[in-house]
Length: 403
Ligand SMILES: Cc1ncc(COP(=O)(O)O)c(C=O)c1O
Image 1 (cartoon, rainbow, N blue to C red):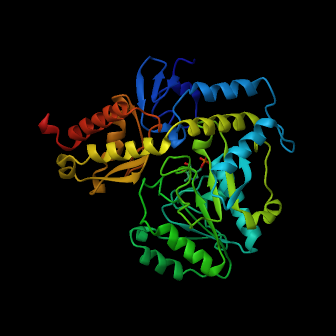
Image 2: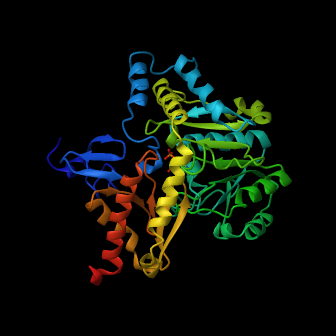
Image 3: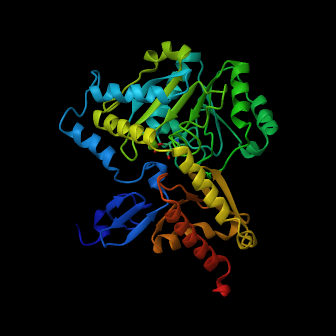
């Protein structure tokens, strides 16, 4: 260890140097830093660690694979085939696994190529507040980082407002105004994650599906954050008979090990080859071992009950009338929950995030939202104790005289 963190130069100045905490160990929902301070993890590290940190049975799968093959690229390994089979069993019946990657953004890029290959069209329609990654291609779909890139080629994307997400008629209106001639795909998050979490209107997915069906457009659901029980079941964009054409997933599949994937509807599978699937580490055997371990673990535990518990405990705790007088709002679904203030001008959320960190609670935040997305395996009492700390910090910020 170097003496001063700042000796690490320019690595992640936005975070690493701003919050100089160095993790040493983790288990379940607890993380310990090198000074022995314990943190309660209410972030699941960007919503990836759905099964909790350091799960013995998942570790075991990785340890076994470390002594075997790590990577095979054009060739297969047994553990890769096992992971593919397991992923296929949790997909909606109408879909199959088309490709594996390491990161979410890479998988989205493939989904975009696939949609273009299927339709022979170019443009992609996305929603203003929905997030899809930070490669140049995926950044053109989002509006979170307007300063990071220059003019966007108009033939590549169209972004529409999702302010109407509370009102499907408004979304329908926005959609109807979009020129569809060269439109290959619509991409959306079933629950807005990065700019929230916020739950859209219950008919949002159906509305997008209807628009895609009317015009022969591919519907891509980005379930990188919402998938693997984070919100509602393995994939919350799949609602009864309404299914997307492509589902993209990542994060929770590896429980912290980098692996992502893309599934597509069976009739579209003939286009997979021309969309150029694969990359050096795609389907990496260690990643597949982690994914197999995750899926086995998910089979053995009642994740739907866990996410219901998280949502109910969160809603009950913040239903205390004092939070309403603070102007607090809650949103989200399952294990992807948020706090925000009706009046966004005060900038309390970054302050709340820092206070929580000080109190030993790790969450994540934007200017407007505090995201509460713990490992889904967190114990009810542990979660409740974390909410108590959030409540106390909110009292200190919003009613400092009432101590
Ligand atoms: C909904 C969504 N899509 C895409 C991504 C990008 O995934 P990655 O950071 O693994 O590239 C993220 C990451 O936070 C995400 O939440």
